[in-house]
Amino acid sequence: MESSSQSTVFTWLNTESSTSFIAGKQRFSRHIEVEYPLNFSRYRIVFSAPLQISNSLQQAAFTKIEKWLSSLVIDVSLAVIKRDCGLFCVEVCTDKPLTVEQILQVNQSLELEVFELAASAPILNQPGLLVMDMDSTAIEIECIDELAEMAGVGAAVSEVTELAMQGELDFEQSLRARVAKLKGADAKIIQTLCDKLPLMPGLEPMIAELKLHGWYTVVASGGFTPFVNHLKQLLKLDAAFANKLDIDHEKLLGTVSGQVVDAQFKADTVLNCSDKWQILDGQRVAIGDGANDIPMINTADFGIAYHAKPKLAEVADVHITTLNLKTLPYLFQYK
Image (cartoon, rainbow, N blue to C red; front, top):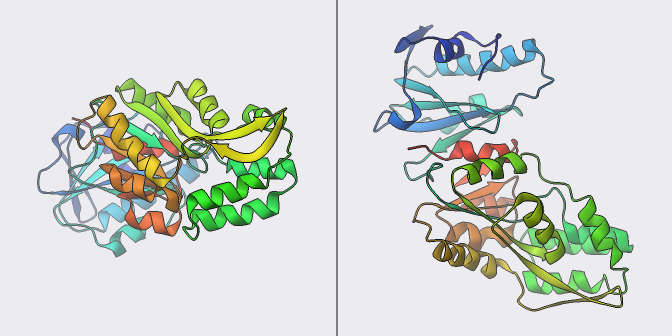
């Protein structure tokens, strides 16, 4: 959180050693992450500042946060939360829980989000497991839709995809219906898409930080094996699961074979991988965006909805709504 244009509270947090500070009528104390005040509610303000942002815009953002903090009129302790993902983060501990209205006062911005941190939040610096959905979570696209566009049947497939994501259709039924529309397409479109697969912003630094702390990373996708295997190799993931597209004579047959990776398979992946690697309770994390991820999110100790459909957002422990995947390590605690 280094900036020559930071507001007064942030300057105090970063450059001074005094244990308290007064801004307006609000007195702040400071703590370090591993020694937060017990019996206080914990919140993380995560803020993304693009490299091209001007000093005046950055100053305005910090001033907005400081103004909000100074309006709380309760006991507040602050800590700078440092990770390797390059975001700004301050932990706000309050002696009384913040109201929804108080959080909305500062959360109405595309540049920042406020998250409540539970006492049971995963511990970053202990081994853990992250199981990720692929389409619209680890990557920016829905692979089936892109393949369909390349095969000339985009509109028909996209309509079915959206219904499946909203939880209006059985997944396996919708999967087979969509794949059937690809029958006869040239199999070369698979490699063409692999070569330009757009990673979700923040994915690579997020994975790197988790691996730095001994975490296992897995993709469990209702998509297809060529794409998850591409991600596994590119990001050095520990495992990847998806559906097998049937191909003969360089043509898609419009079918999938073998075990279907559906919602239950994703949930089972959390359990099977945690057993395989002896992951402790509390350290099993899952992240996804669609209704098909609900069982996986519910099975994990900590479920994250990422730019998600309403049905998933309702059941997740945390919902990242505007920031990218760099946010994830800031949602974990450090001990």
